Length: 91
Length: 156
Image (tube, rainbow over all chains, first blue to last red; front, side, top):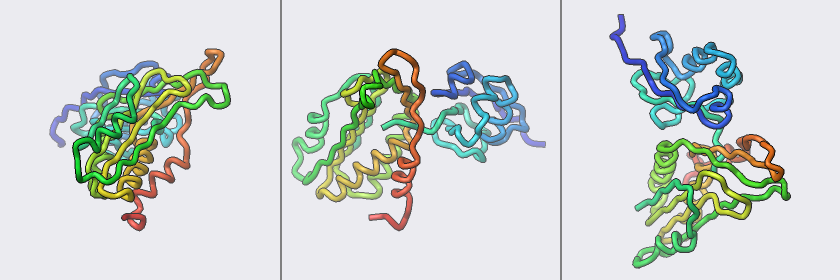
């Protein structure tokens, strides 16, 4: 039995991910079965049409955990902030 | 000594570049780059740059740290603007000071390649008629340019 962990985290969405989800940020409280960034994307995708649209091509969406780039297999345990965004186009 | 700024306001690239050498006797080279907003043949009215405040500064600082670990640098300045930017206006600035030009040129190029692919900024195109024209898509070329610097074989 794993120790009870605080999974509540702040989610931020940027650019067309933000537009499709319909909000710039929200609080998330995913179930314990959601272990990785990829799990979180799958879980979010089931929350509604906007989310499903935002994440319909999971490889087209990048993520960061606590402001550091994270791959889809990165563990979310302990993260306070998760962000989802398209590939970057700065510079 | 590195300066990293993410700001809405314009900047003075000459003063920023000169600032890396002023009062120093060890700097032999300052290489700088300025990125501007293009009008794309008259179709683009402006870019709206969105960014992830906090991570943008931190990610640029990480890239500067990598450059400093790779070349003997004497100073780095990176400025990236956000918000509405019209054609002809400056968007981004990178300047690197070193004893010799090789390190300065290479580090400036690496920093720009990293900014393009890793710094959390997104460009929205506003068309000349005010119509929404959509988000700029990431270019595979930019990924290839950035990948050069993580290839151990291409190290200095």
